[in-house]
Length: 387
Image 1 (tube, rainbow, N blue to C red):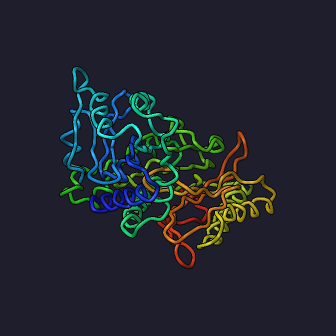
Image 2: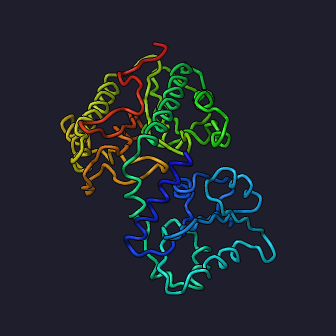
Image 3: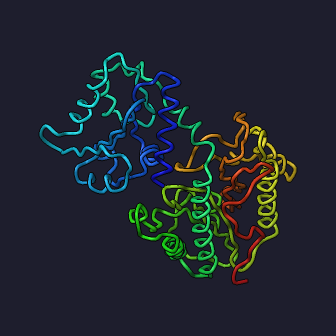
């Protein structure tokens, strides 16, 4: 993975040279993982930033809390790792100032403005006019659209972790079982699956297999809410149960989208029709995916299925995925980005009947030269559990 991220940085420097950018200041955790190959655990939400400074020519520098500097140095290929302290002369502001003073005030800087914390911006603004700093977001977004074979291989592993989680959910469903126990079964199964793919050597010594977070899991009438979290509610006969792995599965920092729904004991004709329409809409979207097709056309293919079945138009049909849970392009009206081989997407289907039920399905895929391939693969047929 370090070879991969070093390559990403070399490409970034090449593009900076083409656009006359002297220094890139990276503050977003996902962006730093993409270029530096490491990630931390403190986060800027505590006013404790980790930054990666990439000059157009020469070696990058990482600024990180002293308590994390040993771990960061062991994880990254970047040789210049500078730890900062909370008090005294070695505060992060002063470390950043020292590095910025190595560049003339007329130097052209770049950053991701919406991903740079205000406190970092204030320090940069002391020497450089922030209003004149180039927006690096579009350049990085373009770089991340097409995944390499190595990245796709990592995402396939993430897909296997997700399918292990979904299998555990299906096995745990029964009347009287509380939602939180089903969610815990998913987390445990995913962690075990991820651990089986890791050697514990080299860079993988810093990759945790632990699947963590608040799973999006809901049952019964609450399935219409889409993103409710697991609670103490106990399953009842006739309940739909829905698990979303979006932003939950992260293997070697790469994420995906994956959703399935099951029915406990029985299913009404109305729910079955909605579910089958949901699957048909997703499959229509997938059938439309191939290089050159505008992203919005994939969404329109799904929308046509909903409309024909008498349902309201669908919300966004999908989004690109990778290091971040949301990347560009998106499968929604107005996004005319042509699809290309190597793009990876979460492609969803969903119908909500407010206060009664909802039906969901989602998969992650990679666009190929002649269509797409699944990164997640789990049965899509209507599934009645313990019926």
